[in-house]
Length: 159
Image (cartoon, rainbow, N blue to C red; front, side, top):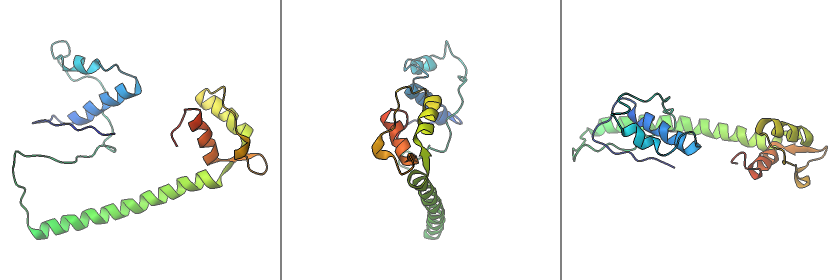
């Protein structure tokens, strides 16, 4: 999912505020009609009181400057390219470490089925969740991955 926002000028944090309203609409916290209401400057002359969306998932993909060519030296471009690749490599390694940790949780850690069912009922208010016998390990436990699969089938998490 992504938003493509085009304009001739933006106010400070304007895109983050727009995205936050879209997140609220997507979660059902706001009605889609709020967009038209926010553009009615007569009834709402100031900035609405919403918390800004986090900058973490937002990516500035491209800026167009009315056919303006962005010139630079080969040396500067090389330096920027190398710096970006070093940062990408560092973050890629961190992401792989985190992914490995998540996979390890799912595959290696076991919880007791009854404890999981009770926890899921309290955490998510699920009354009809049951654990399936084909996921049970020796000793009556479930891998955490199997627990997450149960929650996904109950419509609570995306795995």
